[in-house]
Structure formats: C-alpha cells, structure tokens
Length: 110
Image (tube, rainbow, N blue to C red; front, side):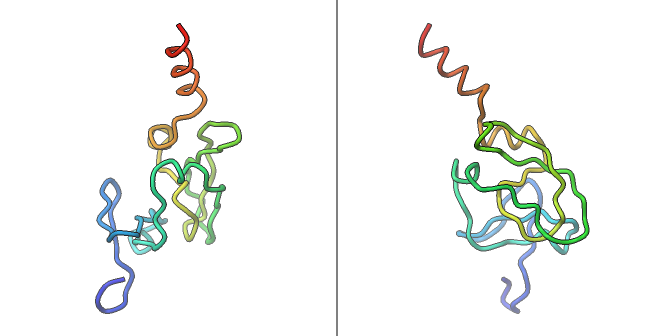
C-alpha cells in the first residue's frame, strides 16, 4: 500500500515491491499490484493451482508438483498466488521439474 492507502503498482520483469510483498501480474496495470505474503524459492512450486477470480482468460503457467512439470491454465485476472507465471520458461526456471531431476540423477550416477 502507498502512503495514501492505495495499492502499490509494480511492473513485469522487476520486483519493485517492499520486503514481504510480491508482484501480482493481473489483467491490467490497475491489477498489477504488490500483494502481501511473499513466498520464497521452491515453496512457490508447492502452491496449488489458483485460477483467481474475475472475467479474464489470461494464458498462464503453473507448476504442478504432483506431475513435476509446468502446465498451462487460464487465469481469471484477480487474486491467485505466486505459482502463476507469464511464460513456460519462467515457470521451468523457477520450478525445475522432472527433466532437471533426471539430468541431475544421471550426472550423479555415470
């Protein structure tokens, strides 16, 4: 929140939010705001799929911890959680899945 009690806006590609907050990429600039409750590191990858609320149908990616891979879904534009990525590549970089696990296992057991 800003000094006048309005949501703090943020931008794609850089986390300009205060400590403990995360940048929620919404359907518009007005809904791209800092949200409390930032989760760090691999804990993001354990969050359940959150479709959000609203009328938008934004193509996004989330990490499915059970299948250990990134899966596309349609985000509704509001609410949700940090397991919500704009691209598959961003999802895979944040949450290395089964292919990364297999590569690491193979390199440990030549």
